[in-house]
Image (cartoon, rainbow, N blue to C red; front, side):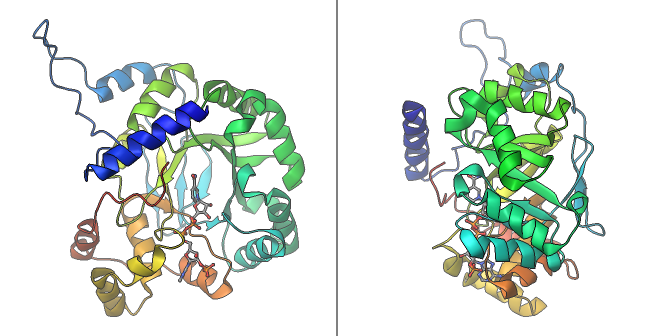
Amino acid sequence: MKKYILLMGIIVIGLVSAGCNQANPTINQSNEGNETTGQPSTTIEEQSQQTDKNISGVGHEVVFNFDKQSVMLNSGYEMPIVGLGMYSQLDETAVNSVEYALRNGYRKIDTAKIYGNEAEVGEGIRQSGVPREEIFLASKLYMNQYSKAAEAIDEALAAFEVDYLDLLLLHHPGEHDVEAYQAMEQAVKDGKVRSIGLSNYYIEELTDFLPHVTIMPALIQNEVHPYYQEKEVLDFFTKKGIVMEGWYPLGGRGHTKELFEDPIIAKIADKHQRSSAQIILRWHLQNGVVAIPGSSNPAHISENLAIFDFELTKEEMAQIDALERAEKHDWY
Ligand SMILES: NC(=O)c1ccc[n+]([C@@H]2O[C@H](COP(=O)([O-])OP(=O)(O)OC[C@H]3O[C@@H](n4cnc5c(N)ncnc54)[C@H](OP(=O)(O)O)[C@@H]3O)[C@@H](O)[C@H]2O)c1
């Protein structure tokens, strides 16, 4: 597994340092023809469509409903398009953030085994008083759990003290990921998990993965922000009926200041009398990307959900689109 991660790291570093957005190949990149036969070789999209035939959930249309602040997943479950990200929130902080968010209108929480706060998220849910069935709880299995994923799913349910998870993702590609996904498919049949998906899988990884599975991922969570936009990947996923969710939606810790102070974003924020964070989050949604901003600050948590009473114009969307730098803020 270490070798795999190292290889991924080297590829990403190599491509980023080459100064191009090729970490995720464009859809038709492989359509260069077969040198031996002279015949056009199949594109990655065509190859991928072949393998989709045996997968449930194919043909779903991804449509964000801004009135309901939700999207219908290919699994038939509705999911909020803004959620609270729980990375780097521990102990009382984690309990308080979840409780505050749920009491103030949030209905989606995104966490992961590796964040070390499943019990605290469960506690925050109970303390909020919001009924479990109104909440969309998402978590992720970490790579060291993949070879025993069925047990890991039961452990997660016990840690959160819930009967089911709304969404479970594989955190990264890695050894035994297909087996782990198959265990998640079984968990769907057993009613332990409602929707399943992936994180940090791009076009090639997904294309390699799909021939081994029977349920189309409902959602894939990858790094997305104005300096790393992943438009080709978004297009590829959307055509398959997979919802794209952006991690580091505000650029990630250590990078938010630069994004908030970006002159284009600051100018648009000024025009709408909104914060830069709100402008960026609204841009994600209008692009069809679900946002899960992380915060333990109540004012920020509230502000990040208050983005449904204004709209960015086409020109403003294009101005933020033009900020693309292919600048990844983490290596995976
Ligand atoms: N799948 C993966 O591999 C992966 C990787 C990374 C992250 N994630 C997920 O994505 C979520 C989001 O990522 P993230 O939390 O690391 O980064 P982020 O959401 O891009 O940024 C979080 C930072 O922004 C600040 N912030 C949030 N709202 C703000 C506002 N309205 N005004 C000013 N500052 C604001 C937060 O500080 P305050 O607390 O002070 O508000 C925090 O320092 C994570 O929590 C996690 O759930 C997944």
